[in-house]
Image (cartoon, rainbow, N blue to C red; front, side):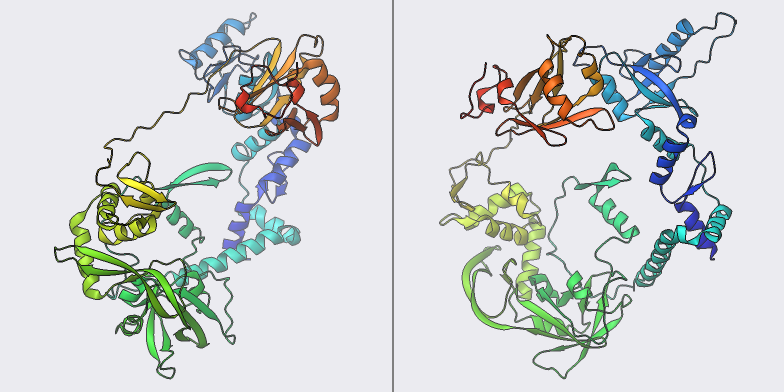
Length: 607
């Protein structure tokens, strides 16, 4: 077997640190550690919970004494490490020896452990790693900690023996390895980029950009949310072979079957004379290298074939002698172009005849003062067109003049919208899309959402006539500063020894079985207080007597493996639904102080 395959297989396998057994996933090894080696990976350890006021800051780390349940949060005023060390010296000195016990302590970042530390009272039992002393919430968390920190990697010899002994066991891993190797070979072959040939391609008008903060995406990697800028995300997807702009080796391509793709030609496609290399077009193309050629014919001359270059770097198909530019010049922006494969690397281009009227076409003309005017009129078109493409009727001289004007302006979106509205909407209202279209061409590239954001009520120079339509009022104001009201801070409330209080900004809650045990001895005065939509105008409070909860609800509810009872409250009828399926009416337990805005007017007030 190829050494590369063996190395890849070794990276995919996990080895038990106690018996040397191999497993095909982290999950399988974790289950094995919990079932067969529970006492070898962890021991019980109690952790004292938070006893400070409710508004105490939630810690990110807990410093735990290895000998007792003493805990110091990282939010402690002072040095938490010194505090734990002082505690160990004072409380755990060996009376029979002049030497002190070790001053080592455990640092835990387990989210569930911190949640329990903040939400519960007294002390709670957790698990401590026997290898390093780290404290986690449960056996599964400890097993995951062992997989990530204390398991040795599988060697190539161990992977080879596993393959020779039981090849069927690693069949899935081998199939994935071979598939990835084939895809990587195909990507490497298609990743060749030919030097630039100088043919101009514009995906959008070359107008000045006023850049804001780069947009970001949140991507979950190994269950952890990671923030990427758009550029970083594109590079990540390209490295992983997930970017849709590349040809996937798995795309279906059959030599003998006719295939058709349709694209809507935008004005930049017409002006520069190219076919955009979008996904629908790539699906009817064979896996060609960057710079290879295909042959194309136009419907009016079906027997005349001319070469077109396929450029993956420019994401376009074009003819270096501008044949496509000459063909596309009479077409209207938005016309649907059909590309039909008729043979090996041969494609016929054509449009469908469908006479109809296209509304709101934009025609540009010089205003005689160095600027431009836009005439918006309906236009009769002979061909089938799409419905979602802005239609600009431009010749090459107008296009270059518009670009020069755009370079000279260099204004912000706010100022560009104001200029466009003053030009277009003095006498009659215009739609926001028309404003975006003018701003996009005259002054700078921007999104439709950015233009929409300018039509706020405080901008009184824009008068709303009907949804989406505005006219310009010269007497109106364009405020220099926009005031934004700060969000109301989430208020806090203190603990009550006689109440078990839970609160969420949502209508989904959980309570712990261990907390309920504290009220079983004397439940008569205690109760469960549930605050839904906490800190919002719709905050709703329920007070459920503890005897009713323990006798009528808990016996019919499901306690999950973490010792939690979960339930959801319906904000419309206040019905509590406990996992799994038990329901109770929450209206009798509505608190009198609940804001009336959060109660349904049709509900009855209960004492």
